[in-house]
Image 1: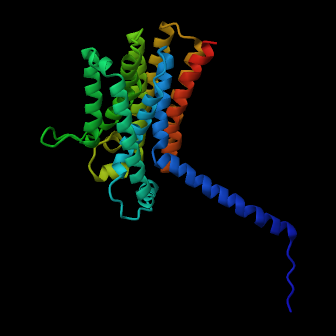
Image 2: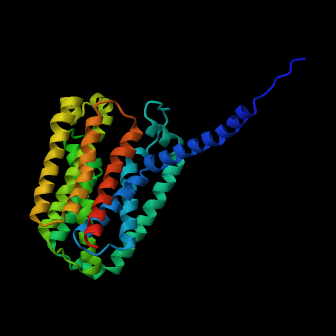
Image 3: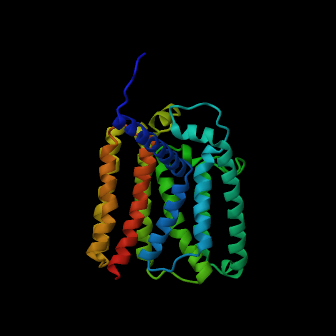
Length: 329
């Protein structure tokens, strides 16, 4: 007979390890759910819109508008992944997540689409008179934004126009930046005019806020092109990184764009007499983006882009909000 003696301390360590492993697994699943499902991207659009309202000294939009902005952002970004996903992709964890959760994604899209339609009807019926009284400039801005968003995916009828901005190489990043800045800067202004009859007090300042978001989101989009380098190269899509390579994209495009953004932000805000604390807070996200741009010389996992790089957009919104709240106390 062989008698084995067990060390109680080792047994205790084993019992503690299982729950920790389970919590880590659940935490990893939750992170993938939030970031792969694009719910975090929807949150970014709302956060940037709130930042703009505070910085432009405008009232907040309605809950209905923020809900519509959140859901349409998720719908828009998830559209590319809704189609049939049959192949098992161990190379792309995001594609694999959509393959495994295909039914949930389709159901979520249907719910969001239905809720968005209801909100559009609700806002339209409640503000019908104000909508028809909008000045021509608001209508033109709205049409340009919608057209840019539709053309990005080539959603317009081919008989009308054959153009898919998503496949136009280096232009793609600027289109993404434009759509983002328009949705979080211009659309809230149009909604405020419709729902509350509020006009922009300082068009120059609001235009600068638009440019700031446009530049920040464009740089963010160029960074994401680094992630898609292999696919874009195979599709002969001439993004910056495919055309010029990783090193030149980082040091001759990303970093110079960010430095121009930093310098222009300092000069413009100082000329406007903005509090130095607010200026420093607004500079923080650009400094972090510079550091992240430099770090992309080494290959990163997809969650790095979704959590860190997209997370910097959320950080930017928080810094902008804090800059207004702290300097107005």
